[in-house]
Length: 593
Image (cartoon, rainbow, N blue to C red; front, top):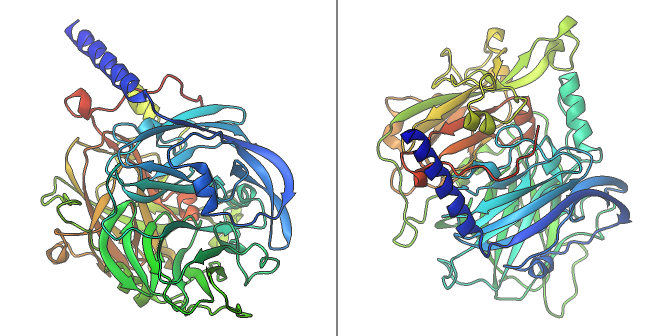
């Protein structure tokens, strides 16, 4: 009886907390639907951001809209008919709700990428992990709880490949009355890098998964929805960023691309990187950046060149293998009286395979780590995990699939290829439903070998399949070393993303991680605090975080092909001993599976 009383008190406290918190919380209404109309959309930022409003309400719709790119027209799934989708501006520590109504033809969910959602996995978004999808004709209200995030984040669909067109900026401004830790820019301009497929992206991945082979590559990259001048039928819509000479601008760069890491530059201009993944860093002066899918960067640029037109451009960084080798462009256009050039100068981007350029940029990232923006890097570790990241294959009957030697392509973490359950892991955990997942995701790979060696044996190709999760104690200090492998002669890095947390990247290196010597080189003073980190194909990355956010949290590669093939797992962080260190109760309505 005493236990029941405590449970009732706990429930009432959670309801009371939610009711108090919900007062004066703005709600945005989004509708995902199919509205077929023909229009060549012009780039519209930053004007559209000011029209959306930093703190106001706006009715939204998630729909399928007809867009023309690369000389052809197709219907794409959108929010409010916009590609990219609408931007949301909020202040640090605020709350807001987004009601999503699905009027499209596919299931959909929305993830708030980089938002920690303290104690609130119910609104995190990955389908069959923290919620059942929003089916056509249904709706769901997300409750977004901001905490320590500040800077550029983003939102995107988290169901199959629908995020290709369903995504947009989520800008977290400083608290009311506070400024940036750098001079106030003249203006802020979101720069969203995305993929464009001539075909239906959902059909592309469905066909690939059915046949077991590689999905089609994208046909173009875009900057704010436009491919740019280097593609056919694209000059009219090329995004233009208008600047005044001598003024400094803040670029809020988001890599929403499906399957490629990207280099980015602006011709004849220097860049200063001041933030990444919703946290500030020590300023980095550079001519280029390398940004992985899922990552965001805050970059200052000063208009200090002769008034003219200059290309900003982005193209893939890919070690080897198949990738989209096209280049997307936009134009930095100076105000003033001058004759525009017939062809703006292009930046000299690093080569596609320039691993030194990628590594030399990434290694410079350091947290700001000052009195106003301190870090809290775990100095000791309670749980060590060593996770190998591999490409794999699965056998097919009569070698009838489109993968190597008639097999089916797969991928894994610690030789476990994740299987999506029939109901979401969070609900099963909360209600104690057995048979949905197993809690035996391993802390280390099942066997050790020269992970980065050449000509690895075929016996390493086939993973185990399952819905396996790792359970962590509340407030435990966790270290994960991600180890890239050369299984199947893998040709790509892996941007690993953890939901519900930012983590500190304390170390990285090439080759196989050495537990005896490599930790001595860790940066435990000012490591970058991020939510997505690129793991080199033949190298390793070490991260640390404190498991102080109870709930069910997805961890996966942000290359969409790899996630679709099983390069995923789930971390379950147990409740603490008090109501304030335990998961919130679920919302009043949950979508059925």
